[in-house]
Image (cartoon, rainbow, N blue to C red):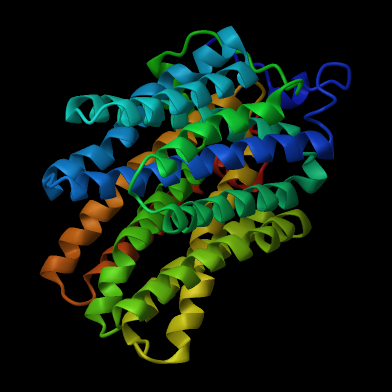
Length: 408
């Protein structure tokens, strides 16, 4: 990176420096901390939207409000590696949790809409710090021979926590102080497992535009994969219930359809990680993209009341989320010395862009191509990504990145 480097986390992990994180107990503690933070964020997202709706705030303002955390993620991501270099990975993780807790306290003490927007931005900033640091540390701590399985467990934990958040909200309801108090306490609980936890030293000097463009050029294949994951996953979570209703499903059936999608996203990740360890992971990568694309193309032909639709939802959810798992695997395998932290930052950025652009694109397609605009538009995005990958694989550096061999 033009003479400026990030110390490779894997190379910086020595038994004397970070015995806790390199052990099973250390990874379990890290994942417990990450899990608490994920539940907090995804509890806050629907909770705040429901409360604003009950106060009579218009849907347009609520839409802007829900976008605020993602704006914070986009703005803070380029700064994260520099902050990690200066303060250390675990300290930055804890800082993100303090930001999340502070955001929830602000939401408790005031009803001022401007302060709520600021608090929501603060919550997104905390999520950005946690996101990059946690993904990088898990990849760095995982032994190469077990990387796929550990990442599969990690994605299972993340998916389970994402599902637990709305379930928790269903128990507490959106009224009163209790759900906000829980959302404020969870970041503090996330800090507890990190106490005494030693982590690899992640260091980085200043990031310049040429550094980021070089990362994107070298790792375009995994970055395109995560972009597609963001587009399809966030569009599916946001719009599949509406699409199900357009197909004739009842509201209860549409909710069940989405529940199966989420369950598949959780249940399939360890198997995908295991396959990455046992097979050539470039084959797993291509198979997942093929399954996602084929599923989207076949979806309009499925019987809306038949069992194939329910099976589709389970395995489709697993394949879409599997794109994230395999991207993490490729990043850990292919990153050049000193580039892992910046690469994970780029992965997070591309996923965030996809998660913002996907629902907008798919929602527009549903209006002009009813009732199947959603799968048609997402299939078109998948085909475009496949075409770009086929072109890129002619370049030796991109083939090396996909195959997990850092180019020399």
